[in-house]
Figure 1: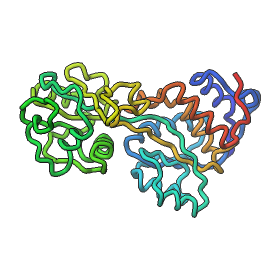
Figure 2: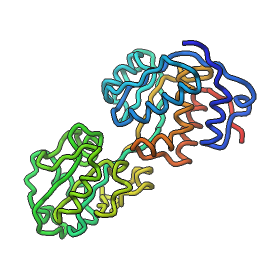
Figure 3: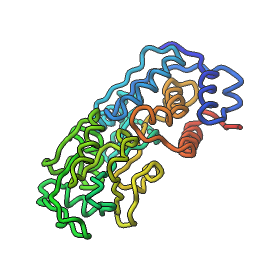
Length: 319
């Protein structure tokens, strides 16, 4: 890859996003080199592709690549040194940490966005809050619950009518991981919808007085008025699904989304560092535009400042 002079452009992007830039980085051009191949979750692919587009515009580079092999495959390739960035929906496992250490990958992790599965119900059902245990009993594989009153808690004596995303979706994986405790552990006798059918799912739940379900929050967040959103009690009280409770993860079916990269390849004058810089400068906008939940402004500043300190990319940031 050619060396590219991008310091002033990157700084301008950061001023728009964060209102501050390093004095040294603003004063002189910075040359960067290296390759960037990013692999990870399908649900993060549009976010990553937009980051790649801006990176290409800033640097003139044409050798970057965005793949979507899934979390496990991407992390395996990352820890083997085969890709520069893993964009994933979960932390590294113990075995993946050992693989990274064995191969000399001194990884750093940044949170770049959030994701959530919002529980919804027909307004007539009267299900304002459900416990994690109730949701698990209702949705787990092999569940025999066919009437809501079997869940206790004063729920209506009404036949179960369930709606949700397809088993290949990120929301399905998220919901089953957090509620059932194991990814993919779900009953199958529910009405599945793919992401482009978000409006159809909301309409179906609104039309069925016994309907209860869940879907990816970012896909339906502007369409929820015809249905009730259901708070989830994981033992700490009922927490309603909304932007703030997803961003601080107090709403249980939610999670952060991560970038993993090697500290050694993301310091000053590196293409990986520049790619991460572009991403963090625009993270909230990318997430809002591509069906993820954005970081708060404070989270963006905290994540970026920690990265800059740990990699030595800039010695200081001044206002």
